[in-house]
Image (cartoon, rainbow, N blue to C red; front, side, top):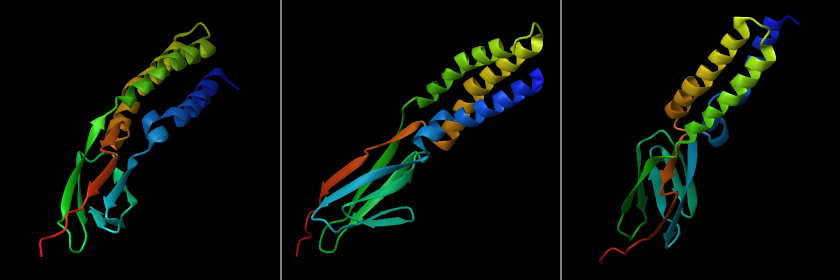
Length: 155
C-alpha cells in the first residue's frame, strides 16, 4: 500500500474512532431522576411526560429546562435544570500524541507525513471540541436528581 494511502486510511480510522470524544463517550442527553412524596405525580419537561418515580431524558445542549410537577390535590411545583460545563472537550487534546505517532509512522523524509500529523492535530484540537460543545456533550445537567415533597392544597 502506498504511503499516502496508508496515511489516509490510518487518519480515517483514527478520526472515526475518536471524533467528538465527549459526544461519543457521554452522549448528547442525560437522564434526570425525579422522585416525589407522595409518588404518582405527573412530571413534564418539553414534550416528555412521566409519572414519579421516574427519569426524564433531557438534552445536554439546552441551557435551562423547566420541569413541572403536578398531582391532583397538591400545589404544583416547577424546578429548573441547568447545564454546567464539565470541560470534557479537553479530552480531545489526546489527539496531540496521536498526531505525533501518525507523523512518526508516516514520516519518510518528506514534508507530507508531518503535514498529515499537523492536520490531524488541528482537527482533534479544534474541530472535535467544537463538535462536542455544539452537541452539548461537554455539559452536565444539574441537579441530576430531583426529590421533592408535594404540599396538599388547602380545602
